[in-house]
Structure formats: structure tokens, C-alpha cells
Image (cartoon, rainbow, N blue to C red):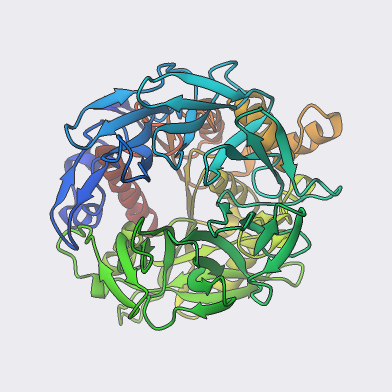
Length: 604
């Protein structure tokens, strides 16, 4: 067994020739990924991109100054961490001279969720600088760099939006990751904090996109909530009498996921998640008329809604489809024409050959239907296709389909968002392993498909999906050929004890509190490390050394335990990576290793 280093990677039991004999065709599928995510400027549709930042690490949040009359109109703020440690710092970038300024300087703290005020002179963000755990709300003046904590408390609090007059700040408190949040308005003149829609002894979820009504004489919020509903609805909350007065999507039984409001305050753009795909609606607020934008947008996922700051009839967004790996478009609301602004590189590949999935639903153990996207190669070969059960898609998945003739299944097992709050909660705490049973049911579905080879199945997942891979290898190893696990949880107890302090309480709400003896026993019992003796098939495991969410010790331990079974494990560590791989060179190497692993398993 050989352990060696190559650049920023540590390769353990991975054959050296894998990265020496590169698959040039594979690299074409990787060319849609830049070195890291950086800020670019495009002046005209499909114009040349001008790169504005050149960091080794990816840029995270980017916010352009919203006021063209501000002295900082030609500037933006952004956040960035180091080596995937998620200790984000806030930067200011002057677009006229290219000068960058660091606004926060505590490299051990998180500073994020940055927003501008409407005047374009101040920003708000949360910071864990005080104790490394709790989120304080900070307002900083750009001209002087003076910062002030305006809300100091316990837990996770996020600045959402300044009021139109900049005298109030909308803030969200996160109780649990998905199912429970609370909303507050902070008066910035007298520091009075008022809760909106005071808790009625029930769990209520709110999305972080909440907008103040801009119309004259109106005092309310457009917000997304699941209160008294299975799905998340777009509602209007009247701040004068503290009541909901309108539900704009009461007849749509899917989640609203994002909204934006036009500059004049008269039009709402709304995105829903309907069976895993996006639908775009426009709402005339005064007339209370809603229109579905049909036959214009291709099947895919739409996000980052953004109305033009002056032109109320131009709506920008990012569109991701099997043929488009994330590009910017602008929809003209006058004639519903769609203009593409960027065209991401896809390595001289013909995107028309990229395969679109079919949505299927399969039966599971408790008579529910589990949704999944099913990608089937176009090859006319009569041989049955091997299968990868995968929770991630993208251009790399197209390589499996087009070059290796491998089928891909992407299930949204219980616990997934977008299918109602009941479905989302079906794997919480003591129900944890029910989501693993959904994978078992998918294996049964594969058994019944004549075009698929049920003896050639690999399961692949990251983070919580990494746990799902390990659990599937334990419970259904007889039906699986191998597993690919990235930054996965191998022991719930040690994970909860060692994940970053700011995450512990939130994760205990979902996974269970290991400090309770009964829950401790349950979490130990279901943890992969407890049942690792049942894993008897090859595995590829990848981990970022700086991961603040799932510590590297989780992967180190499971690799050691599986090897004690005499099972072959390949282990890849990114020395400059965190919760997942984000550097292009590392991404390419990881996928090269993954492809070689799959080819060996499937004998391709």
C-alpha cells in the first residue's frame, strides 16, 4: 500500500499511473470549471469576460452596490475563505481602479451574509468574532471602515434586508437548518428588536429571501413561509396590523424557493421547485395577477433572480440545465424574449449530445413514491448498462453517460427539500435509517429494469450523501459493487462532538442530541463505524483536510476500519480543501481517480 503526495493532494493506495496516464477526453468534460470561482464582468451579451479577482481560493458571496448615486456606486463587496476553512472574510472592490480592501481581519471567525443598505454607504453582515460560535450582526461604514455590533445574542442570526429608508434591519434567526426560523425587525435608531409574526407555539419555516414593500403608503413584507401549509408559500405580511393579507401561491402545491421585486415595486418574479425543476412566475402586485412563463425556458433549475436596478422590465437569473452548466440570462418582460449573457466553456463538446433525464417515481417500503432523475445513455448497444446511484449531476455525469455508457440515477430520498415539510422530516433523528431504506427500494427498482445491469451498481455521495453511501454499503452491500464517498459522516456521535461549534446545536436538532443517553445509544448503533465489519466491497473516499463541517477524522477512522476487513480502500486528501473539492486541479485529479476506479469496478 503506497501513500504519497502530488502537489496539494495526498494519495493513499491510489495507483500512480492513474494521474500519469490522463484521459484527455475526460479533461474536455472538466473544462467547464474555472480554476476557482472568481468575479468576472461582462459588458454586453456574450461579450468577453473581464476577470476582476484572482485568488487561489473561491469567492463566495458577491454584492454590487445597489445605488447608482452612491459614492461607492462602482464597487462591490464579496467574501472569501482560505483553504476551505469557511472562515469567510469581507472584502471591498473598487471597480474603477481595481483596488481591494479587507474589511474584516479576524482569520479565525466567520463573516458572511453581507448586504448593502439602500443608500449604498454601509453593509451589514454576521460575525462569529466574539466567541467563534454565536452570530453577531455588524454594520460597517464603507468610507471609514468603522464597524458596530448592532445585535449581540446567542445562536445563528442573519441580516436579510434594510428597510427602504435604511432605518430598520430585517433579521432572521435560524432555530433549525430547514424547518424552523424566526423573523425580527431591528430599529437601528433605538435598538429595539421586534419579532414579526410572534411565535404561535408551532414551528414555522421562512426562506431568507424577504422583501420590503416599496409602494408608497404600504408597510409590509413579501415572504416565503410554510406556516399552516405543507409547502412554502409566497405571502404578504402587513406590518401595520401584524397579519397575513395575501397568499399569492395558495393553489401551487410546490415550494416557492426564490423571489425578487422590480425597482418600482410593482412586479414580483417568483421561482417554484416543481418536482425538482424550476418554474418562473410573474405577479402584477396591484392587479393581483399571476402569469406562468411557459415555452421560453428550457427544463432545468433557475436561481439568483435579479431585477435591473432601473429598468423594471429586465429580469436576470442563472439557468442550469443538462445542456447549460450554469449561465446568465436576461428575460425582457415586454416581449418575453430571452437573451443569453454568458456561455460557459464545455471543452469543445457538443452540448446537444448531453442527455436530459427522465423523472421517475419508485415505490419504497412504506408505500410512498420516491422521485428520482434517470439518465440513460444514448448508445444502441444491447448490453445492459451499469449504474451509478448519484446525488450530484453536472458535466462530469455526462462523461459517464456518453463515454462509458453508464446509467445515472439521482434519487431525492426522504429528507430532501422541495416535496413538503412532512417529506423533509421523514428521516429526522430516530427515523434516520428510513432514508437508507429508500436506496434499498431503488435497488429493487433497478432489478426490474431490463436495460440495467443490477449486478453492476456503484453508489456515490458527498457529505450527508457520504453517510448514505456508507450506510448503503452496510445494509445492501450484496447488491453493490463499490462505493464512492466524499466528506461523509462515519460516526454521528463524534461528528456532533467535533463539528465546528457554530454548527453543533443546529445539527443536533436534525440528527439528535448525542448528550441524551438514549439518543447517544441510537446514534452509535446506526453509525457506519459501528457496523463497518459489514463493508466488504471496494471504496474510494475523498476528504478535505480543512473541513470545518465533517472533520477529516471521520474519514481517517472509516478508512482504517474498512481496511481492517481486508477491503481495498483508495483514499484521497486535499490539503488545501474543506467540505468538498473546489480547486480546479484537485477537481480534475479527483474525477480522474474516480473514473479509473469506476472503470476497474465495472471492467470497462
